[in-house]
Length: 213
Image (cartoon, rainbow, N blue to C red):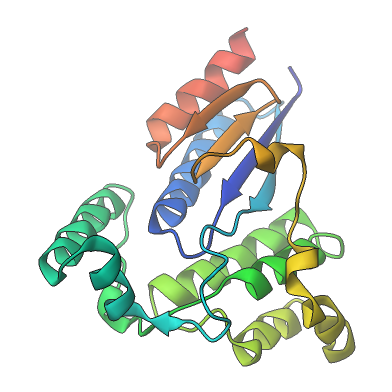
């Protein structure tokens, strides 16, 4: 095997997807160091988990209190998430997040940008959005924030406005997405699938098994 193709279904509002991305990055780094002759490519598929969230978002704490049933349940869930995040070297700053965003425009931007920028630049943009939301509490559903992200990647205002005029039509949809039941979701070489925030070791093992098969 000289090439390993990985497809990942994700949503930017999902903390498990950020944990999963960091785990994937660590697994790929280890894999490419151990098997330098194998080229690894990653294709990201945006999955909007909650399309009915208003375009301007919702108050973050109120949304999760209602969704989980109580403030105590929300605190327990956030601790569970950060326990998992700590295992791969970071912490989510839930106290900084004020808005639970609608991610349609962010996904549309990423989908359209994928046709104009390379894999590494795309990865930087994806990190910028994930980190902006989970580390700094930025509203990644706002046009202003998304335009600053587009500008950093060399995308002009006219193109940006065209992409986001009808964001839902620009969210990537294909046969892969129709099969997703949860995120993060990974497909390796179109045959091996795993779901959930797997550890770097678990992801590496899948990659290594494919190489040996």
